Amino acid sequence: MSIKLLHEPETEDPILSVVNLIDIFLVIIAALLITVAKNPLINPFNKQDVTVITDAGKPTMEVLIKKGEKVEKYKASGEIGGGDGEKAGVAYKMKDGSMVYVPEGDR
Image 1 (cartoon, rainbow, N blue to C red):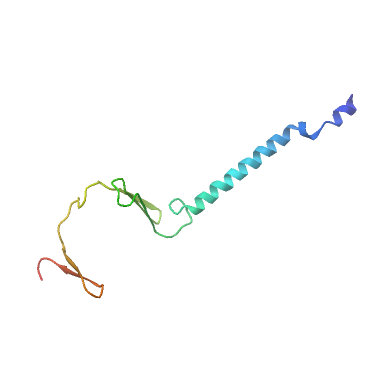
Image 2 (cartoon, rainbow, N blue to C red):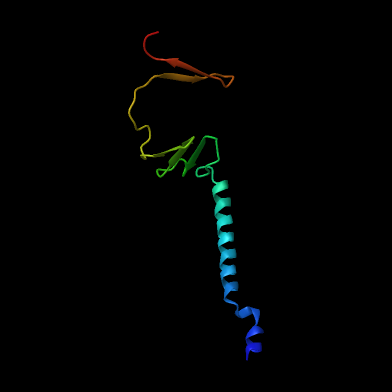
């Protein structure tokens, strides 16, 4: 009977299922690392400033700005020309395509 126990098939070894689970987790971890590396907003190694605009021109538009480690999120209010401020001047487009800004107020 002891000879029969020594010759068990390898498919019934319980450690093989644990090894398969470890392989699956390694593949999942690799996929997550690739996703993080390709996303400019959550990549901790990205030194560039990034601006992402979603739903451009629609009332649900959002702007995400990443400067260094700081991420700012702006949502559109849906109103055209809404906001606080005052008119600072007038801009003119010249025939050659250049822009000229003329400030208002004391000259």
